[in-house]
Image (cartoon, rainbow, N blue to C red; front, side, top):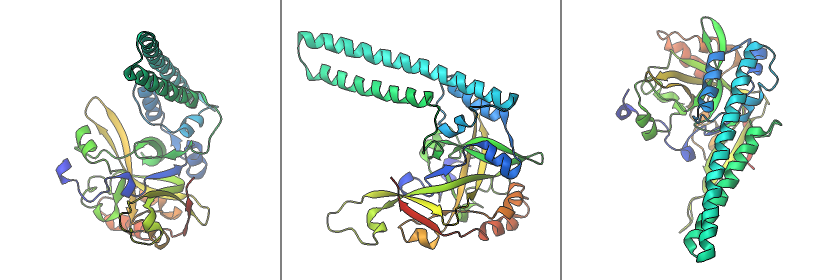
Amino acid sequence: MTVAQYSGEESSAGAAMCYSAQIWADYKKFTRQFGAILSIGDFTRIFWERREGGSPKIPKGIELAFAEPRDAFEAQVKQMIDEAREAELGRIDERIAIQQTKIAEAEAALQKRVTKKSQEIIRVANNRIAAERLKAEKLQRTEPADDDDRIWPGDYTLVMVVEDGRKIVKPMRYQCRLPGWTVADEKAKPGTYNARRDSLRSVWKRLYGYHHGIMVATHFYESVGRHDYEQRALSGGERPKSMELEFTPQTGEPLYIPVLWYAWTDGIEELLSCAAITDDPEPEVALTGHDRTIINIKPEYVDAWLSPDPKNLAAMDEILEDKRHPFYEHKVAA
């Protein structure tokens, strides 16, 4: 598929569904619930990429799940996490040193003549140093925080798939790079973290019926227009303002979110990435001003969803149609 053939998907986080979610970041939950095993190679690969200077966005919760390895496989992943952290801390120190040099030079220049340019150099450098130190603190933190398991488009999430008849948990980027796409295509159409149900047989036809997975979440978040939320029109001269809402199933049960995924490669780079399937909004979501809702399939359909028959897409359609409707309570996110 070329980028010109891409159509019908959401293209901006502010208008799309689902733009953020709190996920199961600890793969052991999948083990307990479904008997799934860990994809060692895929986990070590993304942390190897970070160690070598890449920038995969990996939620802290995924890392913390390996803090106390239970076997040699988990120890292998933890070693790569530790090496990636130390390598990044070294790069942070280097970036801070560069900014400190800029400050020293600007301060020396100020001793000769006060200029706005030198003052601005110092201000910007101090801000960059503060930002780098925050990154270092997060890398070194070992205690969990409330948002450690939250993802946004471009972040990595955990996806359960079936390979050779066995359920496996893989880390995948929450933004799918479709078959045939280049990196440039992806940048031109960044909304592929969601797959509209009504375009599964067109935009997503090379994945629907072939590459199915499950992502599990406890909450999802949406950005809506304040005037839409208040169910009113914009007043004269009023500019639209957005607000963030947090949605939680009233039942307290996790959401089993069906995803489509793809193992993309250009012969050099490899990328596992996915998209959550969305549908028309649940009534309570529509009332808040949003026009899509992620699909939440019934637990009894998980096995069938993970082992699709591309010659029987009707069976997959039935799974998506017979979705759960738990009633999503909402609150304004902090």
